[in-house]
Structures are given as structure tokens and as C-alpha cells.
Image (tube, rainbow over all chains, first blue to last red; front, side, top):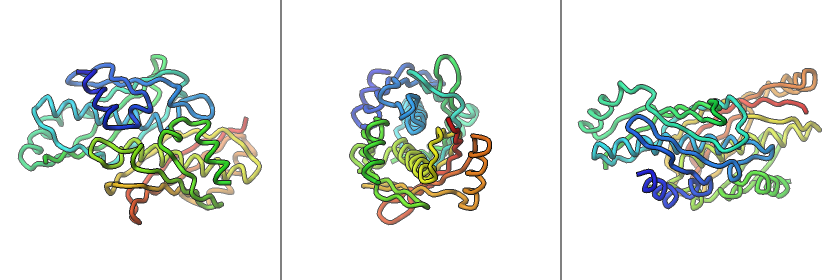
Length: 146
Length: 146
């Protein structure tokens, strides 16, 4: 399942391939992507903030994408807004683990999506480098059934 | 000056090259980057949110980088936090124009940087597609003199 998703991301989102994103793990409650520093480096030999943000967004989107598919749904998922903090410098390979901001919202989100064809939910990603949380992302997504 | 900055970005930030970022214009009060859709597309043939965010961050950083250099300063510039809204779908080539959130903060920022060697300032980027504002980014940067 991780290989299929990775193939899908690299084939359909050129930046995922450029960032050399790897799908490490998928479960019902979390999804982890990782990426090497080299393609994501900045002029100071640390992680470019734009890569940090893009990998965090991709992890959140991929998590939601996988979880709705587990329910047999395939809505369009669009990011509406996000915020991110960059807490520690990232000087090597890093990961982003996405989860729902509030797991209790999931049944409400699903019910709304099935009844009205449209629903919103918040997903968080934590950036990790060298066993430390290096950044925190939170984004609001809207799901629309086609 | 736009060509020199573009060369610098492509050489030192691999993602800037992967996104095919072009430096369109630099002035004291604004900097505009643009990028084609193709390397930044998602699985639904519109702009990947991660690319939108990364180009907005790069515009903000490059603007601040250029403006401090106009003052003969070359501090390290690190993003601390940001927020972004994705307001309209982007279906083709797009741009990001960065400006200070509050121009009146500039002299305060400079004085603080020169006296204490460290200062913070907020930079906004507006994403534009087809003459419409398609997204709004705001980020806090810290400048540290080396």
C-alpha cells in the first residue's frame, strides 16, 4: 500500500518526485512520509522552508486521501488554509507524520460528506529530524464528492 | 539583478530549480517570482498546494534577502512561522509577489538588527493567477547577523 501510494504521488505530483518523497508508513490513524535533505536543501545547507511546508502538506493530503479511500470514498480534497511553525533547524533526512487534529471529528466529517457531498476537516503534520519535532503544520481541507 | 538572483536561487535551492521559478521583478518595495504549472501540477491538473506554499515562501525570503542587501547587510534569514490561504484554483502559470506586511516596521527592524544583531519582520506574498489573487501567504522571519 505504501508502494502504490508512493508511485501515485511521484507519477501525478512532479514536486513529490523532485523532493524524493518516500511513503514510510500508512495506518488508519497516521501516515508518515520521509525525504532526503539533498533535493530539499537551502543556501545554508539546512532544509528549505518551502520543502518543509510542501512535504507537510503532502503528508496531510496523502493521509486524508488514504483514509477516505478506506471508506470506499474518493472525494476531491482541496487545501483551504494552513499554518506552520519551524521550530528547529533540519540538517539531514527528515519525516512528516500526518494525523487528524481531532479524531472525534472523523464520524461527523464522514456523515456530512455522505449526506451533503461536501465536508471540512483539519489535519496536522509533525516534521521530525533526528528524533526531535522540528516543525508543526496544521491545515484545513475540504472534501467534495464528484 | 533579477538574473543574478534567479541564478543564485537555482544554484543553491534545488527546489527553486525543480519548480522552474523565474525572478520577474525586484524593487525596494516588492519582488515577484513566477513559475509554470507543469512542474508544479497536482493529480487534478491544478497547482499542488505544496508548490503554492513553497513559491510564496521563496518570494518572501528572496524579497527580504534582496532588501537587506540593498542596505549592505547580509544576515541569515530564517522563517519562524507562516500562514496561507488558498482562495482560488490555479490552472496555469502563476506568480507570487512579496512585500512587507507593514512598511513602517522596516526602520525599526533595521535599527534592531544593527544594534542587537537580531530582529524579526513579517513578509506577505500574494499568489496571482489569471489576474486574480489566488492565495495569501504571511510569514515571520528572523534575521541574524553573522
